[in-house]
Length: 267
Image (cartoon, rainbow, N blue to C red; front, side, top):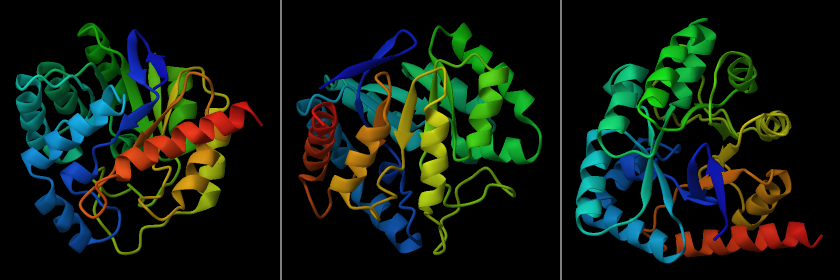
């Protein structure tokens, strides 16, 4: 498995995502609940171990109480996956989320994309400067996520980030709340993907490409080829899986990603 650097942290180029483990399907409430029921502590730890066996060294997961507790159990049992913490707007402000990550073993922390989008809309992005400083003061790489290119244009000018989390899609507007509220009408528009990869091409820091499969709506082989065609040498990809109906889903995604990288190199 290839690795890249986020500040002083080395990560696998394929990173295991965490939205499914916390019940965020980006489909509907019924699917959210199905994921919550499936992802017991034992199933989550089994997924982490499978990721390790595939050469994945890094997991991005929400700094919520469920995930933090499971990670501690997994590490106590000898697990080696390293955690990059995502702040959680439902548990409080971005500062609270950063503290959760810092105090519970995260190797890097970033501000949730919904929070960044919300602050962008309400002209409050200046408040994020203190959060980035807090993360750096703890000795960790710091980043921000977002679903809109404007977030990264502002961050490039005003923040000292070590990495960016760049969503290919902007399925739900965050004008009223930073939290993700599942809707049957989430919008996955390929025009958003085109704008984001154009933005990534000009960023000064490594980008982690996420929502690349449009939460299962895109053909995986085609989606990973698109990612490989638009990744820069220091970029990574983030993918969440739910192996309930396909225990080999993660292994298949890793293979498709590595095949796509090889195809681009030899094109």
